[in-house]
Image (tube, rainbow, N blue to C red; front, top):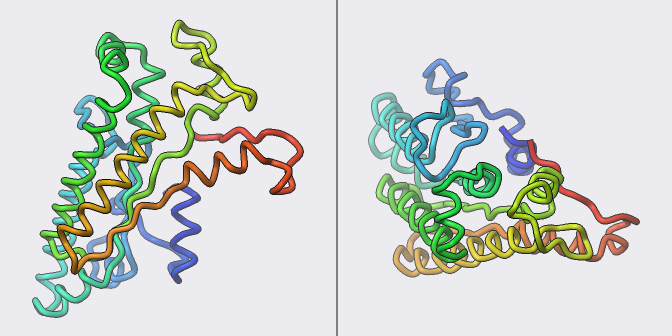
Length: 233
C-alpha cells in the first residue's frame, strides 16, 4: 500500500488494511477493509507483468463480494457494500511506461497526441466505476495522477533521450505534465458524467495534480525555499 493510501485510511479510522493476498479469507479481516493494490499496477492489461492490473483487481473485488454473500445475509452484504468506500488509484504506471520504455508502440501513441492515450485510460476507469456500481458499490473515489514531469526519474530519463525537450523554470518536463493534465481533466469530466448517470452514487475525483503544482510553483508559500521534486518508487 502506498503511503498516501495509508494516511487516507488512517484519517477515516483504519489503522491497518490487509493486502488481498495477505488475508486468510476470514470475515473479520474483510470487514476491516482490504487493499487490492499492487506495485506498478496499470490500467492497461499487461500479461507479461507479475503485478495485478485494474481488471485483475476488479475480479478480486468480485471474489470478496461473493465471500460476503456466503457468510452474511444477502441484505447485510448489500448494505455493507453500499456503505464501503472504493478507492481507485491508477494511471501513474501507464504513463511511466509510455515515456520511459521507449518502444515502437510508445512512439506511436505519443504521435497520436495526449488526448488519444488519456481517452483510452479514462474509458477503462469509467468502465471500472460502472462495474463497481453494478456490484452495488455506491461510494467511489478516483485519484488523479501527480505531475510526473516533476519526478527526478522522469526529468533524468527524458533529458537523456530523444524525448527530452521542454523543461521549464521549475525543472519539470512540460510535455509530460501536459499529458498528465489532460488525463486528469478527462477523468474529472467522466466522473461528473457518471454521477449524472448514477444519481444514487457518490463518485469523487481527487485532484492531486493541481495541489502539487501549486506547491512546486510557489514553494515559499508552503515553507519551502527550493523547488520540490516528487519522488516515486
